Image 1 (cartoon, rainbow, N blue to C red):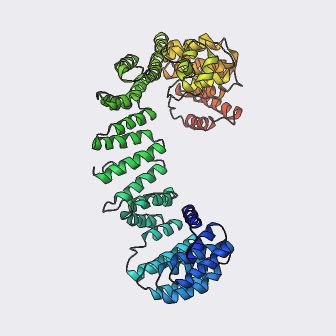
Image 2: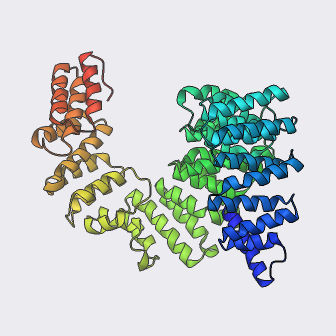
Image 3: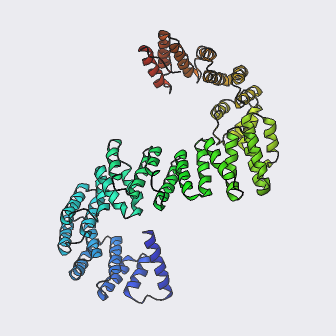
Length: 559
């Protein structure tokens, strides 16, 4: 409709410059000016001059619709159809007009007349079925298609309508079969098929898959099936449907389309695999660079590094394009020396601004190593305008400057194991300076778990408002390091000494789990029952109930 309105305005503009010379031209000008009554008069005049003027008939239909005079078109249509009984446009306008007039009996009669006039056309079945479907009469529309199949011996030529109608009826496998046939010769219908089939319930999906994937291979149907797996939350299954396609142009297009959809769904690692398959076919550095970025977004830093390293041997633009990804991967893996060497190797080929930005990435690598001095050395080349960079936030945290860390880390987007703990801590306290907390996080960054546990426990004594949060962090670290006795002591102290704290339910649960693992089932059940009664709104209640069932059945709990 928007395109039509623009077209009418353009036509009207031309006619204003040179007076309209025909009734049809005047009608267009009047319609564009929203003068529908006058436009209708001009369109009727055009039809008198040229009875077969289909654009004029369509214009009259629009004008009458604006005025609510749709039924006034019927007499003109009868006259036109007497001369041109098999004209698809006229017959379709007639059905639409009768539908607007809500005369179902007359619409059905008009359909039958059309069939008699054009027994070899698919159009009567198609247009009547569309109208019935639009009005919500799916079963009636399906009956029309069944009648067409009986008349022609097959549903060929009506696959699109069959697909839409059967999806609306919940006949998912039949709809998928029709879509498979429809897209075989019309790839532009794939998105419509995905939209139509996506609501299929889980119970119907296996049959739907079989219909789309039936032999012989239809690449479009396979692309639809892959996109549906994405929609349903199974991106890996979707990629499995496409990865074995022949490496021809159709296969390449399928891989690239799926990669785009996977990226939109944030299924990063599947998108990476699709792009790397396309890269193997094309050798495009742009695709490999994109794959490396997707690997990094998906948390697979090693894959991101491997892909970017393969491109880094290039002496041209490809190496420079992938350099930011390579440096971020190296920094996230704590391989700061390599990141620094890679940056220095590119110094003469990148601008000073780029060098400064990438130096902050290298600084992040030193931060992940806990080497604050070298991190600051790389940050010295950065502009003061970039002081809100998360790298500075981590430096501030490690140095105990919670105020600066709080301001800068809230925009952090890097994937770091300790980020959640840091943000939780900063949100729970208004303290501006806590060197002991900084030392705890620095020990964690350096991989010194025992030192981190000790620092978290000690710092808990100095900041009352986050004491329980710090103790819980220490207990989790101790548990992860298999220091079970130490972890249990902290959890028990938390549960007994701080029963009203946010961490108390977790402490109770972990205490009970430890008792269960030690074979003290009665004591474990007592703790779990206490947790369920004392904290009924806790998100841990489902886990507590499961642990209680295991303890009652004397089934070993997993640590």
